[in-house]
Length: 67
Length: 191
Image (cartoon, rainbow over all chains, first blue to last red; front, side, top):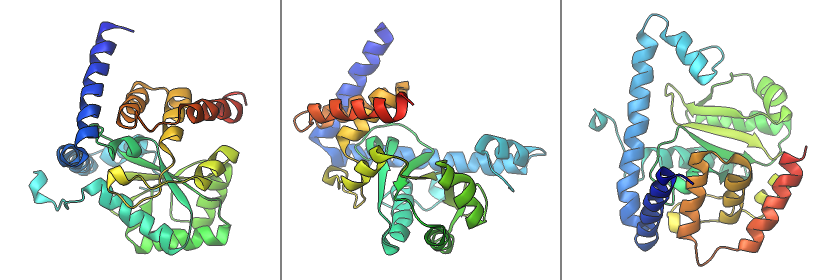
């Protein structure tokens, strides 16, 4: 295990312990983070769809048929 | 700007799952939510674009009913609109199909049929996870850990498993995780 891996696991353990102690307050922090990621991703795809070859790129990215 | 869009107290991802499983519940279709969403609903702080769900094997007619119910509830399937094709070309071949809310790109609900006795066992032993505060059916924590550590093994999956191990450190059935890992070897890795 590398030093980076160890540091990452320390961080994961720290956050998991916090979640274990008070799940509600941790979820109150993570839910808006996850929501904003979803909103940002949709906004990006919408912008991409309006570009010249955007729809084709989205089709490739998301393996969509008949987009 | 994020505030331009409606974000419920429940969260976009939770609402998305809730709306999807409401259709499954109404049609009395057994399901389990597995993998990343299980970790995320336990506070794991990471992004995701999809939620993985395993449903019981359905007849073509029942799946058409499900697909219609999902369309009426505002979902669309990325692989196409033809229910028969989705059933024959994907689900019957043990391939997943993905639903999004109409007009949106993420999140996606990745739907698979239970494909072997390991999946059947997961469905049979589905659990509620009160710590999440969510009224959904999940595969057991032991199952999620076993799959992430034995089969999936990406950095993200190993971190998810570690997170769940800490959260449930006093309650985890470690013998069960070992048993499940052996089954994963048998059904998914030795084939």
